[in-house]
Length: 536
Image (cartoon, rainbow, N blue to C red):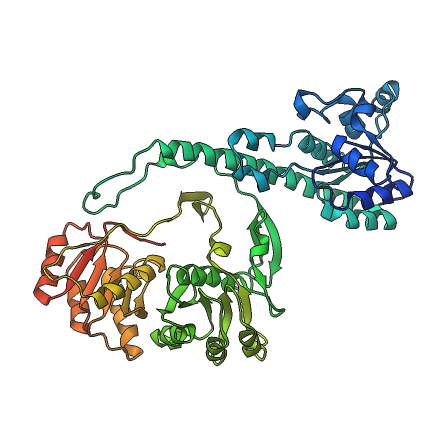
C-alpha cells in the first residue's frame, strides 16, 4: 500500500457545523499547514487565536449575491483540481500566484434538519451550492487532496496523517464525500417534491362514493411523484440473510440509523429478526389499549389488548403458543417487570417496547440470547409516505396506508352487539397486516385464529378455524375479519358452523347478495368496509 509523508501544506475549511473545528485547525497549523477559511469559519478560528486567512482576502473578491457566492471562484477550484503531474496545470497556478490545496474540510448547510420547518423561500436558502462543489472537487482529486465532509471525521483524519495516509484511505474518504453529496441532493429533491405534492393535493377533492363491485376506489398514478429518490447508509453487516448461504447487511435512510438501538449487548439481530420486528411493532401500535403482538416469519401468531401488559401477553400467547416458539414480541407500552417475567419463561428471539422498567431489564438478564430493543411505532414507520417493493429488475411504489377504513356499514338484517363490534374491530386490524388471503378471528380484543398467505379465501377460513380449535378456543360468538371480499357463500357456511357470529369484510363481489343472504339465513351480522386490505 502506498504511503504519504508530511501533513497538508494548505488546507481550506468551510464549516457550517463547527464542532471540533478549533482543535482540528490547531493540529494542522502545528504541523505547518496554512489555513484559508470561509467568512464564518475564519471568524470562529480567529476568535480562538488561530491564524486563518479569510477566503475573500485570498481570492480578492468579497461574497456576492447576499452570501450565495463565496467559494465558487476559479482560484479556489483550480487549487483543488489542478493535477500534480501536469506541468501545464502547475504553471497556470504559479502564474496567478495560487497555492495547491491539499485538504478540504466542508460541512454543508443543514438542509435536512431545517428545511421541513421553513417556508419554501427559507428552505431554498438552506441549499448549499459552494460546499457541495468543494467536496466534489476534493473527492475527484483524492490522490492529492484529502476530502473531509463531517466534523466527526476530524480525529480519524488527524490520526491517519500522523501514521501516514494511504491511497486506499484517501479513496475511502472520497467515496464517503460523494455519498454525502448524493444524500444531500436526494434530500433536496425529496423535500421539494414533497412540497409540490402537498400543493397539488391541497387542490384535489377527495374521491366520494363507493367503488364499483369487485374493485376498490383507486388513486390516480399521476399522484405519485415522477421520480423517487432514496439513499441508504450501511448500518452494519448481518451474520447472514434469510438463509445461512446468503450474505446480508442492514441499511437505513440517511439520519435514521440511530432508531434501532438495543439497551444491552447481545447476539446480533438477524435478517429475519429485523423483518419480524417491523411487523410486530407495526401491529402492536395499531391499537390504543395496552397491546402485545407476537410475530413469526412475518405473520402474526398472537395479538391481544388488555388493561395491563401481562394479561395482553397471556391472551396473545394463547392464540397459537405452538407457533409463538422462537417468535418476536412487541408491546406498545413500556414493559413492566410482571409482563417481562412471563415473557422470559418462553423462548422468544426479540422483545420490542418503547422502554423497559428496571425490573423488566432484570427479568431478562439470565436470557443471554434474548434481544430487547427500545422501539416505538415511529422508529419503524418513519415519515416516508410511499412504500417501496423490489420486484426483480422493477421497483413498485405505492402510497403508504395512513388511515383506517372509512365508517363500516351493516348489510345484514341483524346488527352486531357491542361485544361483537369490539371483536370485529380488533380482528380487522390484524387481518389488515397479515398476508393475503387473510382471515383473522377474534374474541374480545384477542386474536384466536389466523389464516394467512393462502391462495383461496375458503382455505384461509379453514386454516384460521383449525388453528383456533387446535389452541382450544371456544368460537361461539367469535368475530371474523377478511382482508378481501368473499367470492362465495361457502366461507360463511364454514365460519357459522364453527360458531362465528359476526363478520367484517370489504364487500364488492358480484355475489355479495348471496353472501348477505347466507348471513341472514344463519343469523350472522355482517359489515362492509368498502376498502380492501391486501398485503402481498
